[in-house]
Length: 332
Image (cartoon, rainbow, N blue to C red):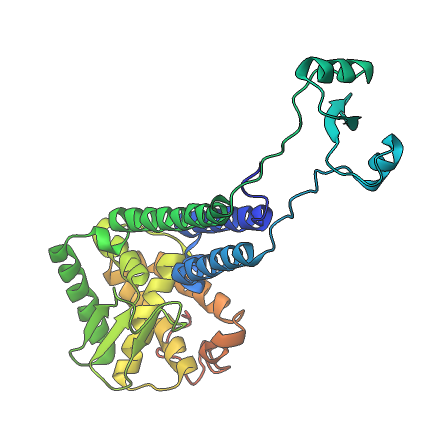
């Protein structure tokens, strides 16, 4: 008997496959996916669905035991309308057939079966799964799903601990943060501190922000992903296209908040201009730094929804009110 008969195997399998595919895409896919969707949320949804499957299976009504006694049509056919215990069930060519039985010996029963043209076969005594085993089947399925979720969580931890910001030793991270703080202090016009929010208490997908700073304050928080991209640029000379540009823009953006700029659009406009010098100081050529900031300016115009407040205002242009270097024709 199929132990998972009362278990919604197909939906459960689809959910598990979807979770595996998403987690692999989250690990190896674009940064935008990591920044947009917290993987913990995906795990919680998957766990909730597994619990729903388990509860549904436990609450489902088990299949009733078939009535193996002779049916009315069998009793009428063989003249046993008033009796139910004197017919013997055998199979013939895959079809169940009732044979009259009145206390015959084993040899006589064999003869009756032979006369009926049925092959010798044991009486069908269908076995049904005990109630305890039927209950354990969905529990086992739930444990399988839970095991998959835990395995994926361990996979993410393993990858992050060896390739992410957490893979760097403590002294390396401290040195990197000091470098980021120096660059932010230049923009803020005063000593400020940059922190990489490894616990994600202040920034991340849940807060819908790659960085946060108190306006006019002295500290700002960046996501570990932004810190890692800045580290790769400053200490490993790695340029990862728009990811590097985004990291520079976020660092400069939060530094302008520390400087005292409150409006998000204005802070973003100033950040895209300051990001050129910051990128150059961290190892980029001026042309590459400008190209990355122009790319960020282009992507800024495409923002919608929750990021609309970060759109730069119309005055964010060459010679405009927000141009930090009106004497130059290069913008940003």
